[in-house]
Image 1 (cartoon, one colour):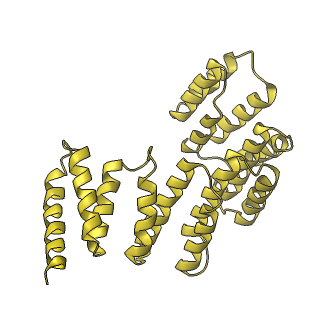
Image 2 (cartoon, helix red, strand yellow; image 1 turned 90 degrees about the horizontal axis):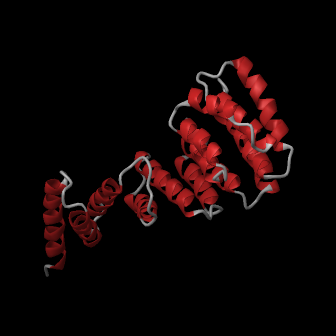
Length: 259
């Protein structure tokens, strides 16, 4: 149900809707559906989208269910409101991740239409992240070409949390593909500068930046990050290891300063 998390950013005004999405986000689709069935109020398109999302959350999604749900999202996407933008985003995601054999061309076309119709929408911004991840991990071509494609999509993203998440993925991809650390670190540092990290604790990222900086020969930056870790997370069990690496960074600085 992780794919429902962005939907929560729509912030429904009614507390009943918030309860539905809370159930959904916490992997309780049956409770969400029951709550939805009890609700008598609510704009019909919002309700229809909610029902489609809950149906989409069932795993595995049978081929017959896919062919029932995809037209529902397409119908909702024909509107001209935020429900339509969300529906088109989810329709594209169905082609991207829900098919046994992903149809990336169709997903790309739907994402492009989303960007054309709602250029300022959160859902367009989110689509750039998804397209970038496909380029990084499922795309064709040389690694640098894939990184370049993802970075061009990053340039279109203005929402700080989405930029942060993609910067983190870019840094990790560059590390996985064994690119120079000078191409890895700027992305990780940029991600660290925005709060609210998901999937990795902030202190782990601080350690990673410090360690990679030391390996890259930037002992001064490594020292700053190791000292920051010890200052900000004094009770973390990794403090002993970080203290040892701080000693290594200080020794490297002394050697660099020696005539």
